[in-house]
Image 1: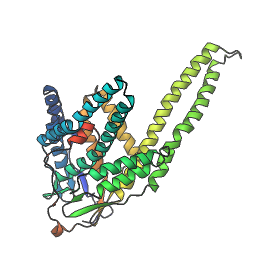
Image 2: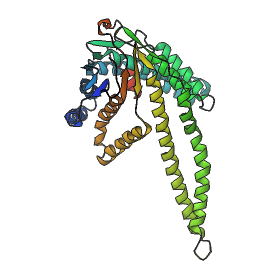
Image 3: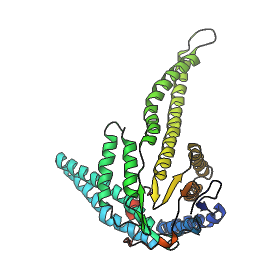
Length: 364
């Protein structure tokens, strides 16, 4: 497989929202009727459709996971991890009420560190599970690593990233991406990822400095606006008008602050995904992610409009929109030797990404 200029992309999405709509509405209805229990089967059903409409080179993907696996994974995570955390938190509160604040505080700290660690493990194991249930030409992915070591890396790298006033956050994000994907494989071939934080850091620095610059700029502008608003045409000053103008200036500041900061954050994540995906390889195949900042903004604005103008019902289409966006902008270049492809020998878990589902965070 070798992409040529003008040739079709190696990745293509062939689904339509009209096909997805009956699945989404049926899943919504059954999830409500079953008080949320059906959502595990709803997730599996969505993935079967989205994967089946995603083509890589000459064949569509296939999702082999089941709702039962996701339910078992969530139940195990709740019993093994979340229940002990709840018990420890109650014991800590009881110790504080009995005057043993130090011991109660220590238990609380230990429990939160454990949750922090398990969040990293959850991210690793969720990606491992999803690759193990993804089929292409009958071949699956996975990893022989359980993710316990990645949990420790997630803890200390995230801590170090925020330690110097958050300046090393890009290094932390890129390093964790490289570490997690380098432990994954598909078929007989290992993924490699050697992304560099350099191209991402410039966008992050803009995001980092923007609040300080906007605070001073918009505060001064709001004060000037308040003064101008309160100045009467005959040169007299109306104190009430100044107050009203200052309030309007503050409202403009708040709106401008979050709006501009949000745009810069999107620009940062657009650069991040272009860098980390572009640094990945699978044997002789390289990848790239072509979505620009403008395209990310249009995706997110479309999400807001869809959810707001449908009074929340449009939320059921977000998974479709996001997956289509991901596949549409994903590119691959290189050569695949089909006669070298053999089935993965990595171990597969018998349950889904329940720990990640319990923490309610994304895997990719």
